[in-house]
Length: 208
Image 1 (cartoon, one colour):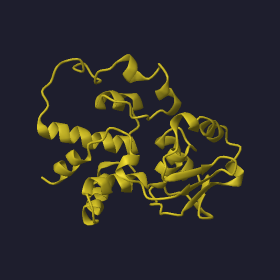
Image 2 (cartoon, helix red, strand yellow):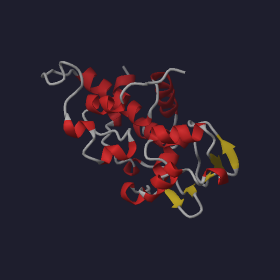
Image 3 (cartoon, helix red, strand yellow):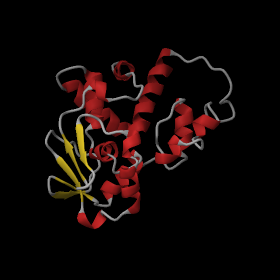
């Protein structure tokens, strides 16, 4: 499967915002966008006029990169959101938030979604008592995510749980650090997504 293997910080600079792709590094002064707050490349510091299409495209690319999803899969999420009842843009963000790798990240077991995806792929978690290794699984209300017994001594997971106070756990999730468990209390709503995302621009882009 194709995936981006280049520098993560380059993506943040391209979108002109912190996407928190490198975990703890993003909270320090080493963060690339804090040191070079302009797009990458030799023309990065030049002025450029962006069309309406360009603005919509950048918004779509930004959300794709936040959640680490390729174009074909992202388009499938949009089409599914468009078929659901309610506001398409909000449905799209809800589907992305309910991915298993995002739950692992948001609950505090990983410092980035990339790390969370790797942990899921390597079989460190169980969902409702069953081992899972598919990052794109959609969770439901009442689902219980648990770190497997053999994985509870993994240093990176324990370090991430120690720093969860700073990052915070969203209201729709519940974390029991001592039991290494997380539970989905409710479905995420638009107010639970704090990243500066203008989902209507994505709807406009795909509706052309």
